[in-house]
Image (cartoon, rainbow, N blue to C red; front, side, top):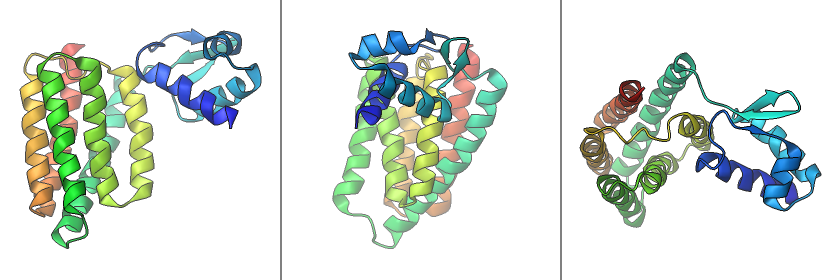
Length: 211
């Protein structure tokens, strides 16, 4: 469906920084960039507005940047959902409901994020970091939590594309990821939740420092 294609492509352009926070977009401009008619673009923009990525601005829309207060609120909710996802994933592992291959894919995502971050490839690091957290949410087996986290991650990413750029952050991120993988793999439910929550709060703290 053209509307879905337009939404997916426009969302990708926003999330990769092609259209950074604060950018004003019009249907005509986006339709030209995507090589599509204005009708599916119009519906795609409406869908992204409902997702909180853009907001009306005159004759067009503006890519949304969360202000510091809203970003704090978003991270607070993310911390709660990350905690839930990690606890559910650890519990499913503890009761033998996660395949070894799925657990290995989580470890691989953590390794990819660490390697890209240490090498300074921040755009790739952001993508791998998100894949790591998305994998935990998938392993949790709760589609509602996954959908809610997806929306929060989009909003956070637009506002904090450089959240891994602090000088001490790469090592901290890698260490927390490995601790979280180990807790989930060992089925340590409470510990997995604690690490996930602290990781989310530390991530927010790092964006405060960079601001």
